[in-house]
Length: 295
Image (cartoon, rainbow, N blue to C red; front, side, top):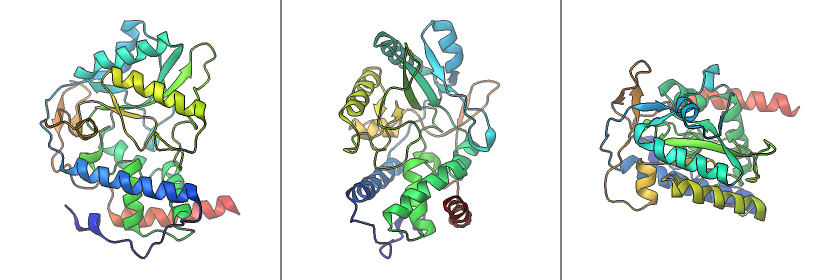
Protein backbone atom coordinates (compact mmCIF):
# COMPACT_ATOMS: atom_id res chain seq x y z
CA UNK A 1 0.00 0.00 0.00
CA UNK A 2 1.36 3.45 -0.88
CA UNK A 3 2.73 5.51 1.99
CA UNK A 4 0.36 8.44 1.59
CA UNK A 5 -2.58 6.33 2.75
CA UNK A 6 -1.06 6.47 6.22
CA UNK A 7 0.18 10.06 6.15
CA UNK A 8 -0.97 11.96 9.23
CA UNK A 9 -3.14 15.04 8.92
CA UNK A 10 -2.80 15.95 12.60
CA UNK A 11 -2.02 19.56 11.66
CA UNK A 12 -5.52 19.89 10.18
CA UNK A 13 -8.02 20.47 12.96
CA UNK A 14 -11.69 19.85 12.15
CA UNK A 15 -14.27 22.51 12.94
CA UNK A 16 -16.06 20.81 15.84
CA UNK A 17 -18.21 23.82 16.79
CA UNK A 18 -20.92 23.04 14.24
CA UNK A 19 -22.60 19.68 15.08
CA UNK A 20 -23.32 19.04 11.41
CA UNK A 21 -19.69 19.55 10.47
CA UNK A 22 -18.47 17.43 13.39
CA UNK A 23 -20.85 14.64 12.33
CA UNK A 24 -19.72 14.88 8.71
CA UNK A 25 -16.03 14.71 9.61
CA UNK A 26 -16.61 11.63 11.77
CA UNK A 27 -18.58 9.81 9.08
CA UNK A 28 -16.00 10.64 6.41
CA UNK A 29 -13.30 9.16 8.64
CA UNK A 30 -15.46 6.04 9.02
CA UNK A 31 -15.89 5.89 5.25
CA UNK A 32 -12.12 6.06 4.78
CA UNK A 33 -11.67 3.16 7.19
CA UNK A 34 -14.26 1.23 5.20
CA UNK A 35 -12.27 1.90 2.01
CA UNK A 36 -9.16 0.51 3.67
CA UNK A 37 -11.13 -2.67 4.41
CA UNK A 38 -12.13 -2.81 0.75
CA UNK A 39 -8.46 -2.51 -0.23
CA UNK A 40 -7.76 -5.71 1.72
CA UNK A 41 -10.87 -7.66 0.72
CA UNK A 42 -10.19 -10.68 -1.55
CA UNK A 43 -11.63 -10.81 -5.05
CA UNK A 44 -12.10 -13.93 -7.17
CA UNK A 45 -13.17 -12.32 -10.43
CA UNK A 46 -15.84 -14.45 -12.11
CA UNK A 47 -15.42 -12.98 -15.60
CA UNK A 48 -19.08 -12.24 -16.28
CA UNK A 49 -19.74 -9.86 -19.18
CA UNK A 50 -21.43 -6.50 -18.80
CA UNK A 51 -25.02 -6.18 -19.99
CA UNK A 52 -26.75 -3.04 -21.26
CA UNK A 53 -29.48 -1.98 -18.82
CA UNK A 54 -31.30 0.16 -21.37
CA UNK A 55 -31.67 -2.81 -23.68
CA UNK A 56 -32.83 -5.05 -20.82
CA UNK A 57 -35.42 -2.48 -19.75
CA UNK A 58 -36.72 -2.05 -23.30
CA UNK A 59 -37.30 -5.79 -23.56
CA UNK A 60 -38.90 -6.14 -20.11
CA UNK A 61 -41.65 -3.53 -20.08
CA UNK A 62 -40.51 -2.32 -16.64
CA UNK A 63 -40.56 1.46 -16.24
CA UNK A 64 -37.01 2.70 -15.57
CA UNK A 65 -35.53 6.09 -16.36
CA UNK A 66 -31.88 6.87 -17.14
CA UNK A 67 -30.10 10.15 -16.44
CA UNK A 68 -29.06 12.00 -19.57
CA UNK A 69 -26.55 14.25 -17.82
CA UNK A 70 -23.07 13.91 -19.35
CA UNK A 71 -20.38 12.15 -17.40
CA UNK A 72 -16.84 13.43 -16.80
CA UNK A 73 -15.28 15.09 -19.86
CA UNK A 74 -18.75 15.15 -21.42
CA UNK A 75 -18.68 11.41 -22.06
CA UNK A 76 -21.96 9.47 -22.20
CA UNK A 77 -22.87 7.38 -19.18
CA UNK A 78 -22.45 3.61 -19.44
CA UNK A 79 -25.58 1.95 -18.12
CA UNK A 80 -24.19 -1.54 -17.74
CA UNK A 81 -24.15 -4.13 -14.95
CA UNK A 82 -22.74 -7.64 -14.75
CA UNK A 83 -24.88 -10.38 -16.26
CA UNK A 84 -25.57 -11.99 -12.88
CA UNK A 85 -27.12 -8.80 -11.55
CA UNK A 86 -29.78 -8.29 -14.20
CA UNK A 87 -32.44 -10.37 -12.47
CA UNK A 88 -32.04 -8.40 -9.24
CA UNK A 89 -32.01 -5.08 -11.09
CA UNK A 90 -35.32 -5.86 -12.81
CA UNK A 91 -36.78 -7.19 -9.58
CA UNK A 92 -35.99 -3.94 -7.75
CA UNK A 93 -37.28 -1.80 -10.60
CA UNK A 94 -40.49 -3.82 -10.80
CA UNK A 95 -41.06 -3.55 -7.07
CA UNK A 96 -40.63 0.21 -7.29
CA UNK A 97 -43.23 0.35 -10.05
CA UNK A 98 -45.64 -1.57 -7.82
CA UNK A 99 -44.96 1.03 -5.13
CA UNK A 100 -45.79 3.86 -7.54
CA UNK A 101 -42.14 4.75 -8.04
CA UNK A 102 -39.70 4.70 -10.94
CA UNK A 103 -36.02 3.91 -10.55
CA UNK A 104 -33.84 6.48 -12.28
CA UNK A 105 -30.38 5.10 -12.92
CA UNK A 106 -27.82 7.86 -12.47
CA UNK A 107 -24.65 5.85 -13.04
CA UNK A 108 -23.51 2.31 -13.74
CA UNK A 109 -20.20 0.98 -15.01
CA UNK A 110 -17.30 3.44 -15.25
CA UNK A 111 -14.14 2.86 -17.25
CA UNK A 112 -10.77 4.15 -16.10
CA UNK A 113 -11.12 7.52 -17.78
CA UNK A 114 -14.57 8.13 -16.33
CA UNK A 115 -13.48 7.15 -12.82
CA UNK A 116 -10.31 9.24 -12.96
CA UNK A 117 -11.87 12.40 -14.27
CA UNK A 118 -15.11 12.36 -12.30
CA UNK A 119 -12.86 12.92 -9.29
CA UNK A 120 -11.29 15.95 -10.97
CA UNK A 121 -14.45 17.31 -12.58
CA UNK A 122 -14.93 20.87 -11.23
CA UNK A 123 -18.61 20.28 -10.47
CA UNK A 124 -17.61 17.38 -8.19
CA UNK A 125 -14.20 18.43 -6.93
CA UNK A 126 -15.33 21.95 -5.99
CA UNK A 127 -18.30 20.57 -4.07
CA UNK A 128 -16.05 18.22 -2.10
CA UNK A 129 -13.55 21.02 -1.47
CA UNK A 130 -16.26 23.32 -0.13
CA UNK A 131 -17.31 20.52 2.19
CA UNK A 132 -13.72 20.00 3.35
CA UNK A 133 -13.22 23.74 3.88
CA UNK A 134 -16.25 23.65 6.20
CA UNK A 135 -14.77 20.66 7.97
CA UNK A 136 -11.42 22.42 8.48
CA UNK A 137 -12.83 25.79 9.47
CA UNK A 138 -11.61 27.42 6.27
CA UNK A 139 -8.13 25.87 6.16
CA UNK A 140 -7.01 24.75 2.73
CA UNK A 141 -6.51 20.96 2.92
CA UNK A 142 -3.29 19.18 2.13
CA UNK A 143 -3.38 17.03 -1.01
CA UNK A 144 -3.26 13.98 1.28
CA UNK A 145 -6.36 15.06 3.20
CA UNK A 146 -8.22 16.03 0.05
CA UNK A 147 -7.38 12.70 -1.56
CA UNK A 148 -8.65 10.94 1.54
CA UNK A 149 -12.00 12.71 1.24
CA UNK A 150 -12.32 12.29 -2.54
CA UNK A 151 -11.53 8.59 -2.12
CA UNK A 152 -14.60 8.03 0.05
CA UNK A 153 -17.05 9.90 -2.20
CA UNK A 154 -15.66 9.38 -5.71
CA UNK A 155 -13.41 6.32 -5.47
CA UNK A 156 -9.96 7.11 -6.84
CA UNK A 157 -8.48 3.62 -6.67
CA UNK A 158 -9.83 0.85 -8.92
CA UNK A 159 -9.79 -1.64 -6.03
CA UNK A 160 -12.27 0.57 -4.14
CA UNK A 161 -14.30 1.68 -7.16
CA UNK A 162 -17.23 -0.71 -7.46
CA UNK A 163 -18.54 1.21 -10.46
CA UNK A 164 -15.38 0.00 -12.20
CA UNK A 165 -16.43 -3.54 -11.27
CA UNK A 166 -19.75 -3.12 -13.05
CA UNK A 167 -21.35 -4.12 -9.77
CA UNK A 168 -22.77 -0.82 -8.51
CA UNK A 169 -25.68 1.47 -9.25
CA UNK A 170 -26.25 5.09 -8.34
CA UNK A 171 -30.00 5.74 -8.35
CA UNK A 172 -32.63 8.35 -7.81
CA UNK A 173 -36.31 7.48 -7.45
CA UNK A 174 -39.22 9.29 -9.09
CA UNK A 175 -42.92 9.43 -8.35
CA UNK A 176 -44.52 7.49 -11.20
CA UNK A 177 -47.60 9.72 -11.48
CA UNK A 178 -45.89 13.13 -11.22
CA UNK A 179 -42.36 12.45 -12.43
CA UNK A 180 -41.04 14.37 -9.44
CA UNK A 181 -38.15 13.03 -7.40
CA UNK A 182 -39.02 11.14 -4.23
CA UNK A 183 -37.72 13.07 -1.22
CA UNK A 184 -34.48 11.59 0.13
CA UNK A 185 -33.34 14.83 1.75
CA UNK A 186 -31.51 16.13 -1.31
CA UNK A 187 -31.05 15.14 -4.94
CA UNK A 188 -28.17 13.11 -6.34
CA UNK A 189 -25.17 14.10 -6.04
CA UNK A 190 -25.39 15.83 -2.63
CA UNK A 191 -22.15 15.98 -0.64
CA UNK A 192 -22.69 17.24 2.89
CA UNK A 193 -23.87 16.02 6.29
CA UNK A 194 -27.02 14.87 4.43
CA UNK A 195 -25.04 12.37 2.35
CA UNK A 196 -24.69 9.39 4.75
CA UNK A 197 -27.62 7.00 4.43
CA UNK A 198 -28.62 7.32 8.09
CA UNK A 199 -27.94 11.06 8.41
CA UNK A 200 -29.85 12.68 11.31
CA UNK A 201 -30.04 15.94 9.32
CA UNK A 202 -32.97 14.94 7.13
CA UNK A 203 -36.73 14.94 7.62
CA UNK A 204 -38.68 11.93 8.82
CA UNK A 205 -40.22 11.66 5.34
CA UNK A 206 -36.81 11.55 3.67
CA UNK A 207 -35.60 8.98 6.18
CA UNK A 208 -38.64 6.78 5.61
CA UNK A 209 -38.15 6.97 1.84
CA UNK A 210 -34.48 6.07 2.12
CA UNK A 211 -35.35 3.10 4.29
CA UNK A 212 -38.06 1.87 1.95
CA UNK A 213 -35.86 2.23 -1.13
CA UNK A 214 -33.07 0.40 0.64
CA UNK A 215 -35.47 -2.37 1.66
CA UNK A 216 -36.49 -2.82 -1.99
CA UNK A 217 -32.87 -2.85 -3.16
CA UNK A 218 -31.81 -5.29 -0.45
CA UNK A 219 -34.71 -7.55 -1.36
CA UNK A 220 -33.21 -7.69 -4.85
CA UNK A 221 -29.68 -8.42 -3.63
CA UNK A 222 -28.21 -4.91 -3.62
CA UNK A 223 -26.71 -3.57 -0.38
CA UNK A 224 -26.47 0.13 0.39
CA UNK A 225 -23.17 1.97 0.80
CA UNK A 226 -23.67 3.58 4.24
CA UNK A 227 -21.94 6.83 3.34
CA UNK A 228 -23.95 7.75 0.21
CA UNK A 229 -27.72 7.58 0.02
CA UNK A 230 -27.76 6.76 -3.69
CA UNK A 231 -25.19 3.93 -4.06
CA UNK A 232 -26.04 0.20 -4.06
CA UNK A 233 -23.76 -2.78 -4.74
CA UNK A 234 -24.01 -6.49 -5.37
CA UNK A 235 -21.38 -9.22 -5.53
CA UNK A 236 -18.42 -6.95 -4.80
CA UNK A 237 -16.21 -6.13 -1.81
CA UNK A 238 -18.72 -3.59 -0.47
CA UNK A 239 -21.38 -6.27 -0.19
CA UNK A 240 -18.90 -8.77 1.23
CA UNK A 241 -17.89 -6.44 4.06
CA UNK A 242 -21.33 -5.02 4.79
CA UNK A 243 -22.93 -8.47 4.86
CA UNK A 244 -20.07 -10.08 6.81
CA UNK A 245 -19.35 -12.62 4.10
CA UNK A 246 -16.36 -14.92 4.29
CA UNK A 247 -16.15 -15.64 0.57
CA UNK A 248 -14.21 -13.49 -1.93
CA UNK A 249 -16.04 -10.92 -4.03
CA UNK A 250 -17.19 -12.11 -7.44
CA UNK A 251 -16.64 -8.78 -9.14
CA UNK A 252 -13.47 -6.67 -9.20
CA UNK A 253 -12.33 -3.69 -11.24
CA UNK A 254 -12.28 -4.55 -14.94
CA UNK A 255 -11.55 -3.11 -18.32
CA UNK A 256 -14.42 -3.66 -20.74
CA UNK A 257 -14.55 -4.30 -24.48
CA UNK A 258 -17.78 -2.62 -25.68
CA UNK A 259 -17.73 -4.62 -28.91
CA UNK A 260 -17.81 -8.02 -27.23
CA UNK A 261 -19.10 -7.17 -23.75
CA UNK A 262 -16.20 -9.12 -22.28
CA UNK A 263 -14.26 -7.96 -19.25
CA UNK A 264 -10.61 -8.24 -18.21
CA UNK A 265 -9.21 -7.68 -14.74
CA UNK A 266 -7.37 -4.40 -14.28
CA UNK A 267 -3.74 -5.07 -13.34
CA UNK A 268 -2.52 -3.43 -10.12
CA UNK A 269 -6.00 -2.23 -9.09
CA UNK A 270 -4.61 -0.82 -5.84
CA UNK A 271 -2.81 2.03 -7.66
CA UNK A 272 -4.43 5.46 -7.46
CA UNK A 273 -5.96 7.04 -10.56
CA UNK A 274 -4.98 10.58 -9.57
CA UNK A 275 -1.66 11.26 -7.85
CA UNK A 276 -1.06 13.88 -5.18
CA UNK A 277 0.45 16.37 -7.62
CA UNK A 278 -2.77 16.23 -9.66
CA UNK A 279 -4.84 16.69 -6.51
CA UNK A 280 -2.67 19.68 -5.47
CA UNK A 281 -3.08 21.27 -8.90
CA UNK A 282 -6.83 20.80 -8.73
CA UNK A 283 -7.05 22.26 -5.19
CA UNK A 284 -5.29 25.41 -6.40
CA UNK A 285 -7.59 25.69 -9.43
CA UNK A 286 -10.68 25.00 -7.36
CA UNK A 287 -9.78 27.68 -4.80
CA UNK A 288 -9.63 30.21 -7.62
CA UNK A 289 -12.96 29.03 -9.03
CA UNK A 290 -14.63 29.14 -5.62
CA UNK A 291 -13.19 32.57 -4.86
CA UNK A 292 -14.42 33.95 -8.19
CA UNK A 293 -17.92 32.59 -7.55
CA UNK A 294 -18.08 33.94 -4.00
CA UNK A 295 -16.95 37.46 -4.90
